[in-house]
Image (cartoon, rainbow, N blue to C red; front, side):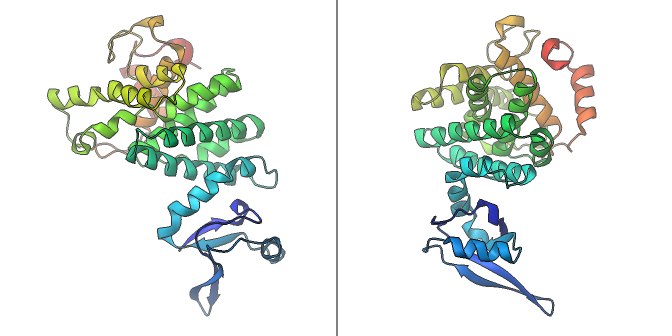
Length: 305
């Protein structure tokens, strides 16, 4: 069983999975069915839990995806609920995003999954813009264990926080954040053994990895659901300011600002995340590596910010 916050459960809704209460008697823990997933949860049940200061219910581990799909449908309500702590909102938003991206990576050609991604970005922007303490709250829940889909979520969260910091408006954050969230979709077409290889890639393997940029763009264009401006992070997150990046070797201001920023965020998250072939670096250490060992790769205008 795993805990779920009561703040994510809305009155008169169907959660879709069984909810349990945890009992502890003589150090023996047991779980008692509180509300069947087939039943709508009524206000008197929620009020009774709140009266007894119950903050968490429990679900079976195997029901987590069902539960997160339910929470996703209530995300706007949760983000706008002033009774919910910013840190708790951040964890809910992050867990929902991981679930969405897991589905995106299973079926990247689905317009439905892209639409879910865009809605998540919109709700996350609302959280970042309207909530005091959103930076520390969002940063606290970022995962430092690397999976392609958690990396995508991290890059989107970090990029949106940076976008707010440098003055992007809501509409600009939306197209930018969508591109960030979907920037690595092309890796679904690459052999996982190459992506997760511990040793240095050979030339053939690296050439294959580099194809993920074009592959991802092609897949997302076919959905017809992605704004043209969102393709800048997707297409340019591996371009370098000095022209030594890929896939097109763009240089300087030939790289769109979304491409420049996404390139910085992409490298930073990769360095600060535990990988199969390297441990996670501390933020200062990662930035020092980027400054000292990747000279010329980034536009100083954004990197120094």
